[in-house]
Amino acid sequence: MSSRPARNLRSGSSPTSRGRTARSLPEARTTTTAAARVFAARIAPWFVLAVILAACSGPGADTTPMPATATATAAPLRSVAVVTHGSPGDAFWNVVKNGAEAAGRDLDVQVDYNSSGDPGEQSHLVDNAVARHVDGLVVSMANPQALRPAVARAVAAGIPVVTINSGAADSAAVGAIGHVGQSERQAGTAAGKRLREAGKAKMLCVIHEAGNIGANERCAGAIDGFGGNATTLQVDINNPTDAQSRIKGALEADRSIDAVLTLNSQIAARAVDGAREAHARAAVATFDLNSDVVEAIRSGALLFAVDQQQYEQGYLPVVMLQLYRRNLDTVGGGMPVQTGPAFVDASDVDAIAPLVAQGTR
Image 1 (cartoon, rainbow, N blue to C red):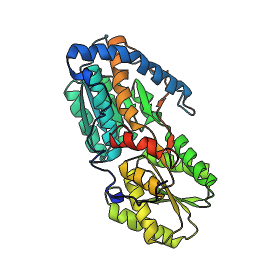
Image 2 (cartoon, one colour):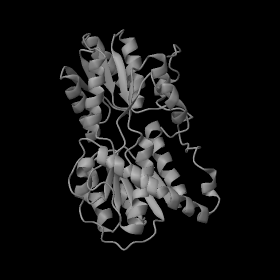
Image 3 (tube, helix red, strand yellow):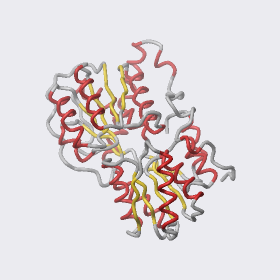
Image 4 (spheres, one colour):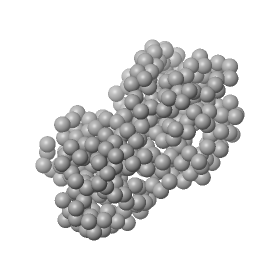
């Protein structure tokens, strides 16, 4: 493990991870439309197999039967709208975008990505996609109550929907044909167990978005896995200076806290700085990767990162929509397709680092 300090840890992202697509995919895919279709036909069975295996192997998955939404006639998939709750410039969501756009190139599908952290604005983006008569919709549902009416309108308009990242429990109820993501409760439990196994006695779990059901599930799972001796702290991802101040204050107020778990790579940077300013002995771990998190793990400033492999959350839904539109296939039998949790720590960070730099992890 390198002893060099983390660089640009406050940025939450880096130029190498922002707005870049995967460079390792075959360059031949863009030569002609015909070549792209041949390539898609060859890779589709392998992605279908990967999706099915992931769905079947995901413990704790929702086993609610898939609703009978396949009423449309089989037709080509030409356009997909991806609407997420990501904040502008968030490195995590840039990787999701990269995955979706790569799938679009591979399958000769036009992919249009938009995002807003405001649930009302996200619902408006969904309605805009419906008005454009897209062939498929991919949407994250961090706030299911706010998003449900807009997603229901898409389904009523005959647009197949795949939910991603958040909202697995509500996916089937709104008529989506599938969900791709990780079980947040399961991932939180695994993170809490790792902190407990590291010998930590009291944990602070930092929630960065009010009303984000996935964040709440992560913390609840982490507290269960850790053993219950934990507390939570609400901060605002859109006010990083205040977030750092609140984390520092919490650590100064309770010196028995020896573990901090953040749920977002940008807040991880603030937790590291807050712990240092508080002269706290707390170890910091986080959910999600970016280049700065990689460097922090290398330097020892972060213990580990929970990786939900979000590139798959962008790529696989486009494949699923292609299969549904062309063959009325659904994947998973009502269970979410699990993309995580995986863990990155000092033992494997050097192998993961180049993939983070190219925007695919």
